Length: 326
Image (cartoon, rainbow, N blue to C red; front, side, top):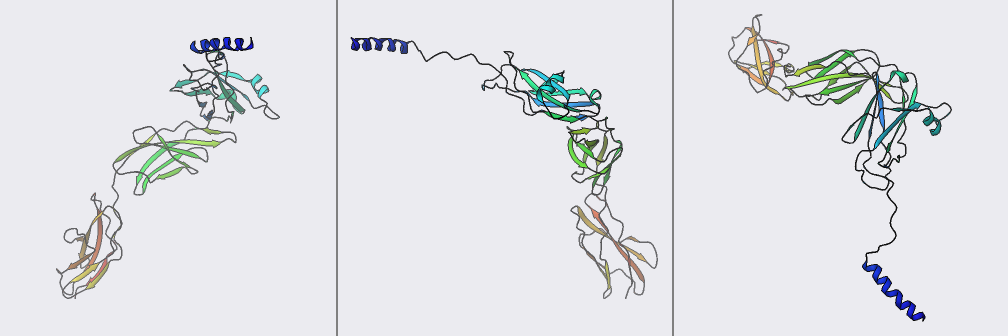
C-alpha cells in the first residue's frame, strides 16, 4: 500500500509542472523611492537656492513610472545638538520647486530665516503613498543679503582683459561669457582680475558676485551688471633692444636684438641728420641688421629702430644711437 501512495503522487506532481506552477506568489512591490543623496544649496541675494535630483527607481530597483511627490522641509538647527525628531516636529513644509528633466531647483525667500542656522532635508513619496528616507541634511547660516559689486569695468590690455569693480567684501567670483552661458572664470581676494585666457577678435562679457563663507555654507550676492569688451590686437611690440652702430668702410653698420613676440613681423630703421628729426630709412625689413651706405663723410647721424607686428602695430623707436660718418 505504501508503494501505491508514492506511485499516485507522481501524476499529481507532473500535472502541477504542466500547469506552469513556479512557487508561491510574490508580495506586491512597496514602490518606495530611493532617497535623495545630492541635496545642495546656498544663499543668493534675497533667496535661498536649493537643488537636488529626483530618484528614478525604488528601493526594490524598480523604475518609477512617474516622478514622485516631493516633501521639502526646513527648521532651525536645534540647540544642544541635532535631533531628527525634534527638527522634524519644528520644521515647515516648503514649496517643492521647479522640476526640469529630473532636476529640482527651489528658490525660497531668505529674510524669514535671517540670522538663523537652518537645516534643510527632502524626501519623496511613491505612487503607493510610501515615503523614502530623508535625504542628506543641508545646513546653511542665513545672513543679511550681500550687495552686488558696482562699476564693473572690462579693459583690454596687452596681457589680457583687466576686470575691475567696486563694492563690499573680501572675496568675489568673476563670471565670463562668450555669447553662451556664463562660466566661473576666477575667484579672487581683491577687486580686480586679469583674464589672460582670451583671444584677439573675440567679444567677452563679465559679471561679478560677492562671496562670503558663513561658516555653514556660502552666501553670494546677485550678479553685477555686465561689462562687455571686444578684444582686438591694437598693442605694438616692444621697441628693439641692444642697438649697436659701427662705422665701416664707406658705410654705417647697424645690428640689434630680435624681438620675441609671436606675432612679430618686421623692423623699421629710422635716421636723423645733424640734429634733425628722425625719419624712416627704407622699407621694413625682417633682418636684425642694416647697412647704411647713403652717408656723407663727417656728417653726424642718429639711428633708431622700431618693431612692427602682423597687425601693423608699430612700437616707438628704441633709444637712438649717434655716430659721425667716417
